[in-house]
Length: 369
Length: 259
Image 1 (cartoon, one colour):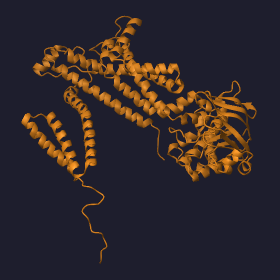
Image 2 (cartoon, chains in turn red, green):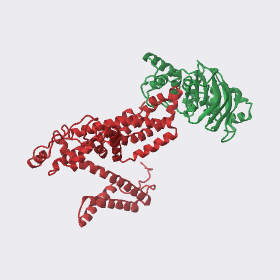
Image 3 (cartoon, helix red, strand yellow):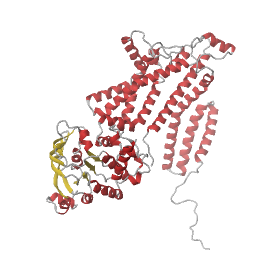
Image 4 (spheres, chains in turn red, blue):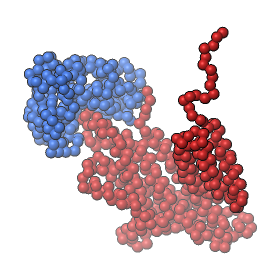
């Protein structure tokens, strides 16, 4: 049998030199070993090892690529290294925070009664006993959890209608009128208000209207809505803007009134984005500490009435437990409680973000055939 | 179920800019009228004045009269929403409501206006409208699926079904086939031929063959130059416009010498 096949060549004429597929791994291994060696000379620490190894890895991979593959591929590798490096740098604090809170917070969270009891009647004597005699940790965050929940819900009830209606006015009726431009400007200004100022505003407003010393959950909710409203307006406005004009015109051409068009065509089309924007706005204010301290005060007992009495919340609970431990001589139990509360707060924010994604998926316009 | 439209000395403005000037035209009931002309000559702008849709654009206004069976659309106290309920519109790009199923899209005109309708009546209306838009056989098994899952041509016919479900007197079509392939275009053109038995149809098209195929009468619009207002140059029976136009500009345009 005669063969007319062209002889098999080692390399295609269309390619230049190529690094082996395992090249990044080889360079990484070498960089890690070299980095460890260098660090061993000047005193080892994990952080420095990571930095030195990363620099060595980038230099090694780019240099090798330059020799074998040419300058274009080397530049490509350099860019890849920079992008991945920046990504890791950005993620590092996040993972560090989550890791620290998890490690420190889980003991508090696992403590029986942590989620179901308040700090009512818990004194330094109990904490001293816990440390000195190994008695179980008493007290919990139920009051603070309920406070955070009620204050945030009330703030949401205040801000969502105001924010959403403002956004609807801006997008559907504003038409670049002076009023619309003024609102846009002041919403932008509101976005930049420091949270403590919002707290002082709410406190002062209630002092003036209701009476001096008014500190309730409702005041805190007003302070939080001052922070929430601009976020809700901004995100809803963006979402309403991307609803195609063609849909509005389609509805008008069917003889549908403007308000019905907004209510039944524009809002349903944008609802997924609006809902996730609202959820993110909630996540933004749920961790506010300063405005709650000046508006709702601090409580160790369960108070589920937002209209009377001081109220605890998770951020203020953390703050006071760290700053004024229940037992000044033995602050460890207080710090365990504070970390536990911090973990609960982070879990809450994460649940809200997951909820936002879920809402976006449920409400998003259906596709499929 | 169809009415005629008479337009008298209509000027259309966008703020201060005069977009279309001095249009006089009589559109017969139960006929297909095509508007042809080069891009930017004001055909679509003029079409949108026929059901007061141009007012949706801030600053747009008109002078003159548009009479629907003798009633001036721009008379004092006339509610544009009432006008649009009688004069339906199909747009250049198919725009079914993405949040609604095929069935709900057809019923949109009824449901969005909160008119109560029993399930039986709704079923009849959906079937009749989709039959009327030549879409029933293709979608009858998936009425609950989203309208955005259909092909472009099917979506456009869905939009036509949506427009005829509110039982208008007149249907305006703004280049309904410009985003569609030849097969879907053929389906829409067949449909236009059937629609004229019941409705007055006005269609804007860039495609002169299409105007020649579907319309009874043709109006040729032209523009003297950039920044000048568009004008109605000639209006007459389609065969006349295409074979023996009175105006030189019309002849140049339909014979492909410009535009």
